[in-house]
Length: 107
Image (cartoon, rainbow, N blue to C red):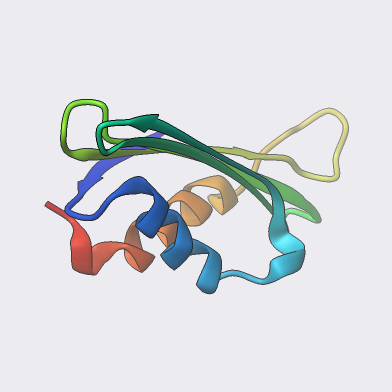
């Protein structure tokens, strides 16, 4: 899991991430306007990695319940082999992608 904070609201963070990924990789989008400027959104992505011969998923949870946008990236990767499930860094790479895309807004 990778955690970081951004200076922009969750909905804006989500919009930036969605502009930087292939639409076919977006599996789920969920948005909640709590009121009083508080927002929460969840994005789920899935991408095929050749090095693992399998898909890696990334769930990104963004919320600003305490005034600052917290971003949590949870990756899950799998390999083609049934016995050994090594993701060879695919999951970590996927989570790092989200942080890179939002790097201009990190605090």
